[in-house]
Amino acid sequence: MSAIYIHIPFCRQKCAYCAFCSFAKSEDKIDEYIFHLTKEIESFNYDKVEGIDTIYIGGGTPSLLKTYQLKRIFDALYKKFKVKKDAEITIECNPNSLTLAKAKFYNKLGINRVSLGVQSLDKNNLKLIERLHSPSKALKAIDILKESGIENISVDLLIGLKESFSSFAFHLQQLIEKGVKHFSLYMLQIERGTKLEKLVNENRDLLLNDDACVEFYQKAVEFLKKNRFLQYEISNFALRGFESRHNIKYWTGSEYVGFGMSAHSFFSGKRFANSSNFKEYYQGKREFCEQLTLQDRIEELIMLGLRCSYGTSKKDLKNLGYNIEENANFLELVKQKIIKEKGDRFYLNPSFYGVSNDIIIKLLP
Image 1 (cartoon, rainbow, N blue to C red):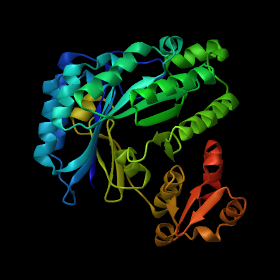
Image 2 (image 1 turned 90 degrees about the horizontal axis):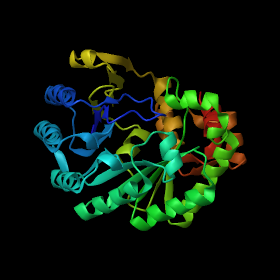
Image 3 (image 1 turned 60 degrees about the vertical axis):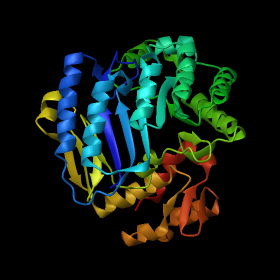
Image 4 (image 1 turned 180 degrees about the vertical axis):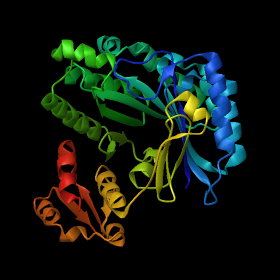
């Protein structure tokens, strides 16, 4: 295990589309949470920990934390684990809670990558999904990060909001010219119980339909490709050398440990998650804990591998008792050039990422 995830479940307010484990901030509640979070880190006991080479602080809105609160987390991490000098350390930030003083402090702590929750540069869409920043504030946040010395900047954007592609491409170009090195483009999901679900039920025309979303996504892929961004996962694009090393660990089946409410972990063949309830988390309770079966591991290798440009290893599947080349669907998909092969590995033709789920199901044992 060489990867750590830290969950910070606080936001200034919950966005209209959000179904993540997040809550409106309260200073007393945050201090109490940090106390239990650091206690969890300090009490971690696993004898196969290697040097940590990626740390990811997500949420929620980690950039809401005061500098002393963040320092307490890092003090606990560095006391417990050996963090490599060249480790990729990422923090998620929202433009409205980022300041130059905070960004400089991040740099001083060793944070060298920021994932910026922009979501859109269209002011009407920002209002619809109840984001607190303006387009200009989002662009200013990039300037702040660069001034602080943090150059490895990723931006999250949503696909599915009502906007012409020409407008979206203009915004992409603005972000590229600002020096953004990585983009995560996510299809907007309507989650149960969110404000957005209620709004869309009242007016279906607020968002793009499924076919329009797929077309929009394909145009975005081509646009980013022309601007030298490599699509290394269905939703992720990076200039060469700026791929998310942390997220790649998830997609390639590496072990990792998560600290904090609702944080997931995977090591020693087990997958488990902390409780998403404050009281239960403070008591050390888990949401679930499961020992993965061979079938589970096979399915994960295929599903995660085919989301990425790296693909899946036939040898790894054989070691788990599954010969993919005996699957008639696999042979037919190779014949149709939907699945491509390169040595031991096979991967999905990027032209079919939009229907990847249907293809993956055909390949499962």
